Amino acid sequence: MRKAGILLPIFSLPSKYGIGSLGEEAYKFIDFLARTGQSVWQILPLTSTSPEDFFSPYKTNGAFSGNFDFIDIDFLIRDNFLSQNFVNSIDLKEFETDPRYIHYEKVRKLKEIFFKEAFKNFKEKEFFKDPNFITFEKNNSFWLQEFCSYMALKEINSFKHYSTWIYSKENLISDYENIFNYHKFLQFLFYKQWFELKKYANNKKIEIFGDIPMYISDDSSDFYFHKELFLTNEKGEISSVAGVPPDEFSATGQCWGNPLYNWDYLKSTNFSWWIERIKKSLELYDILRIDHFRAFESFYSIDIKTRNATNGKWIKTPGKEFFKTLKKEIPNANIVAEDLGIITEEVQALLNYTGYPGMKIIQFGFNSDANNLNLPHRFHKNTVAYTGTHDNATLAEWLLTTSKNSLEYAKQYLRLETYDKYSEAFIRSVMASCSELAIVPIQDWLDYGSWARINTPSTVEINWKFRLLKDELNENLENYISYITGLYGRYVNR
Image 1 (spheres, rainbow, N blue to C red):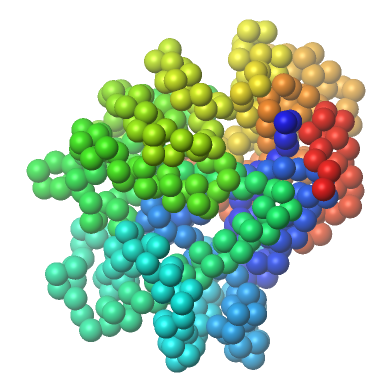
Image 2 (cartoon, rainbow, N blue to C red):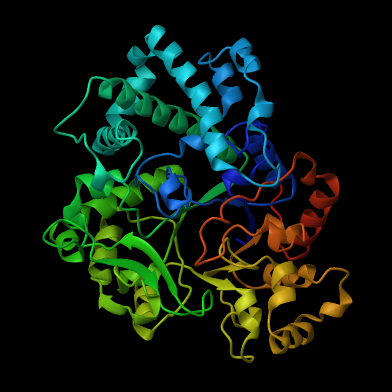
């Protein structure tokens, strides 16, 4: 079945509280997807983020956690965790920012006011005895206790890096238990709201296409409590970090700074931590994209002292054994492999072994010749076709910044001059391809430029901030998306 979807992070949804949430606008977007014949909503990782890592969803501080920034305030009123009077008493003007971009620090300060009040009401009404809360605790006990402990310790230690903490898990102060329960409460709220939203999407025949980052942050409960999972020196410190050498995304490579996995240890445990992680992700999502798939064949190690991505080295990973175990544990996992960047014959062989769909990015198709595998005539059915991902320039930006030769090739290949806006030619070509699933970021449908980009690799402070305005998902856009989706046989009637 030919399908189409839109890439839009949760944080980019419109909201009066400074960041997209799991509230009314998310439901409206699902309705929009259904009306335009889409089958898939692709989002970015839902795990919690930290200011130390510039709120990157690819550097989570808890591999199983939920991002409490996405908890919807109005739904807390609906569910009697907050009163409307209390919410009305908070002057939102004090926290106002540019409606186009997220100001995470202000969002955290504002939402903390609401969360602390909701937590107080939660305790007063003894919701800890609620069967739904008890079930949540039980079903998530394998990660919840450690994550909440880590977040409590972090707060007690003034949110500093764990290496500077005065108070540790062996040396707690009196307020620890209250903060611990507060973070457990936030996780309960996130998961409650998320599964309600997912159920609504699935009832509309919309699949959620999620993302599991290859790596996590050293600022995480996973690293703090389970250093055996990672490569460290005799002091338990990181000696090398993750990244990639120069590729299509960066001429000097990328140093991500995440700790690297101890694959020998993981293999000795039948990869249990990774298996549990993927199982949890497949509860959250209907389709799971494994980020940086090529690291399951070999990973790129960069010296932490130099952080020079041009001088790293590749180290082999027991990828075939891992996926053999994964298929045994989760035989029908709906997984997509992010196979971008430097893909060797060995990586391709591993992808073939798994049978997972790979990805094709039309922007990468015009830097060589007709044999380029990212040109639509080279796509095959078992792929997901994109105009671009969250890591790419928007189409409008690409058209302004690509080389003269690439642009000329694109003009000839796509007959760009025949369209009022060049982005439409790219979208049509991707939608017309034989790939089973075609994904277009909302920015490309809107023909937005560089200011709307989600992430620029090898940069930090400018990313993960783009927001839609309320009136942008309008009738004209709806008709445009519906028409092209239907024209190429991807429209799903409901």
